[in-house]
Image 1 (cartoon, rainbow over the protein chains, first blue to last red):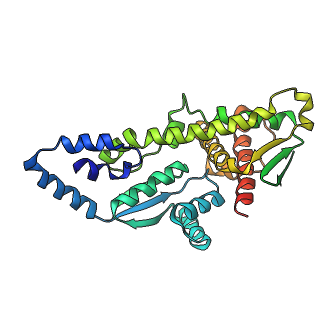
Image 2: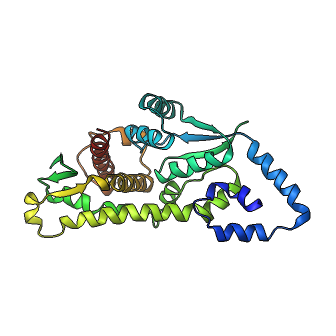
Image 3: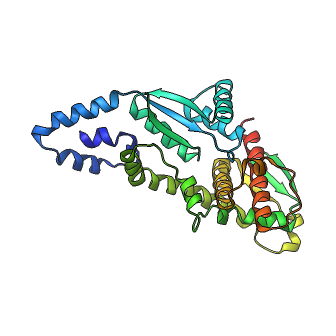
Length: 119
Length: 161
């Protein structure tokens, strides 16, 4: 369970065998405590932030936002311009698992993206 | 050089030897070896939290490396069309299947980011698209970034309709 919670954003990279190993290595007594802590961590809202990068083309960044988040062109352009003008834009916020997945996708497109806890 | 859409492929024709060589250098230009700043840019930190970064390095970074390598291999295969006699380049046509467009976008982006990181180009330099002539290796690097960006723009226009 701990492995599932902690590594939730690496689901595409972690095979079932590794998850099973993680499960098997936990013991009865501390499980509850670790589960609770992990769930609390997961409950904290997270946000996906994209940072400005002078190399990536504006049209490219817009396309990536459309593809990754399914945003319509206008919304994707708004976020792109926010990144360009203000240095960063919050693209998405919510629970940790999808936030981590979005950041992974954005890195696949070579954008500067980070995962941040909502303060 | 001419670039156009031809059915389900992008077509680059009338290549002069200089631009053909820049195209051939795309895969090699994605290599960040010897430039920690370029490596750091390709595999940037996903978070300020150390634990997340450590897990990312173990699980996600290998996937990203595979993704980038696969895209570069596709581009390398397409570029074999340019192998041959330099004198015949004017008749040489580079066909890029639309199905390879994403691989080209990714590889061109890798190349642009690595070159920009290696030479530490400023925002002003990157926005100076009319800079000329090419008098140094650094100038050539900036020209490469702009030329590869031009190719990206064309590919983006064609795939977004």
